[in-house]
Image 1 (cartoon, rainbow, N blue to C red):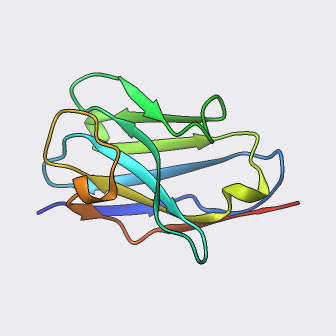
Image 2: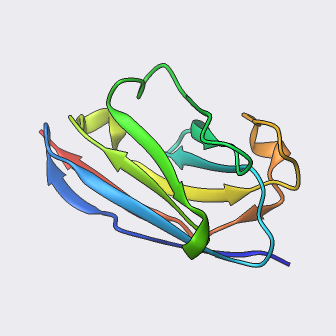
Length: 121
């Protein structure tokens, strides 16, 4: 069983930055970040492999967000820069049971409780 706890969300002005953290307990493999805005479906944001540092990003955040991991702490991070009002959402950390990169909500078996990110204009 894997448990995930996100932190680091909050209110920030457009153009600002936030860093989200996701602390995991249990065995983890590929990890991802997703987000869900009010009235919208949950969408992929970023993913990182546990076996190397390869990461992929949604086009909407590419060049602004960076996902990283600290294996010793069993923690992943999402550094979010140049935030826009359209980045406002609940951000979720998720874990798969595979080594390969995964991009769909259905690929992830374990989810955190989510952390709210609000970007004001």
